[in-house]
Amino acid sequence: MSSGTMRSLKRRVTVRDNGCCYVCGGEDADELEHIIPVSQGGSARDLDNLGLIHSEPCHREKTAREAVEGSRRAREKKIQKEDRKR
Ligand SMILES: [Zn+2]
Image 1 (cartoon, rainbow, N blue to C red):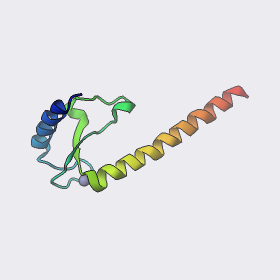
Image 2: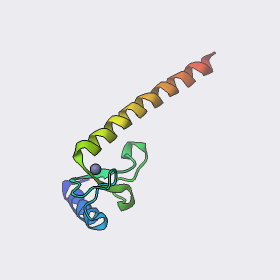
Image 3: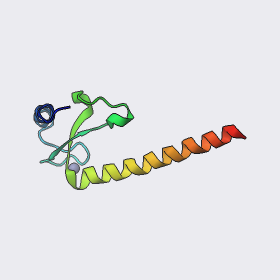
Image 4: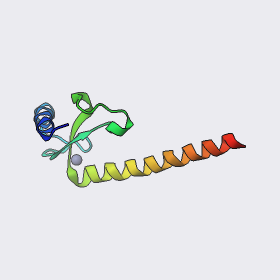
């Protein structure tokens, strides 16, 4: 997606949400964020999947949470595979 597309999407979401962060509800959120990450099947440019977020601390905390969940999922997948071998 081009940065121009991101800019126009961000403008639309900012108007829709009055600039409020979808994580904490606070104003002046400065980043456009996919609510369901594209890597997890979320739509890249569907406005329903886009929200505003504060880059600090909300986005950083969300990224950290997703990293933990991602590694847990990877571990579970590995365990399932080993179960099948037995
Ligand atoms: Zn926030």
